[in-house]
Image (cartoon, rainbow, N blue to C red; front, side):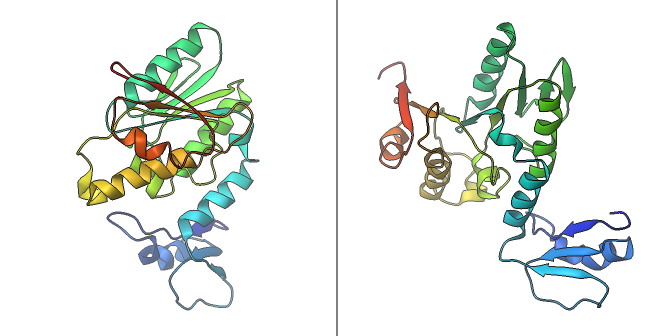
Length: 229
């Protein structure tokens, strides 16, 4: 935080940004967005919101001129296979000289440049900034791994995905989701968020039992793939 900055207090998995509001102000932050009641001195602009993660998504999307509407956004979700599918797609697009940005477990790739990422789906602010920078360098396709935890934590809030791909659903990540039903529903929410619009579609693995739950709530055109079905 530097002089004149906006500070958005976000509650994370291990730490809570609200605990650092005073430190942010001491470092020069002059605007604070927060979601838990507290008092401020008169020289600090402050805004109480229901959800600071949503606020970050709205502000970031506006700040970067709704950049995800200006590129073709492809989101890959599923317990296993996200990295394989996204990497194959990225290489396929590059082979046909379609400038692309790949965001996932192995890092962020575009124009022969590689950047490290600490999460499968990085922090929203980092992601949207990378998309904006890549767009200015000619990238028109963004291929992203979208983990269920990231979607649930609103790390892609406000992103306008055109295509979604579902690989499978297996018994993992229950330390976060607690139950398979909730895990299933979070992934389903991402798939059903794809709008019914010309050029939008969803690709689903019909060999996975979750397929039959997901197709009930999809808005966009969908296609299936599989080995048995």
